[in-house]
Length: 113
Image (cartoon, rainbow, N blue to C red):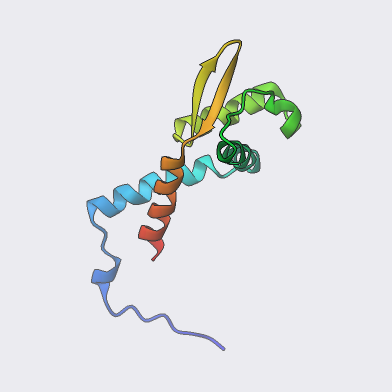
């Protein structure tokens, strides 16, 4: 059984500048979440956030990855604003940015609904 795709309204495919910017923002954030280790890091930070804490322990042992790899994943999540890093000598305390997660969910809904 085949279905035909009939395009009846070219106008429906047009995008505004604001929509294009939303799509670019969503794509950048989705790319930051495109690796299972980054999803795992974000999940760990969300769980700690619910408990009122932050992560200042070693993620290397938790993830089973090299320190340089974990540092790169953290850098990418920080660049996309999914996490904040707060100095807490001698370590750094990482916290999830709930506002960015909410924005990501909103962008998903705005683009795909």
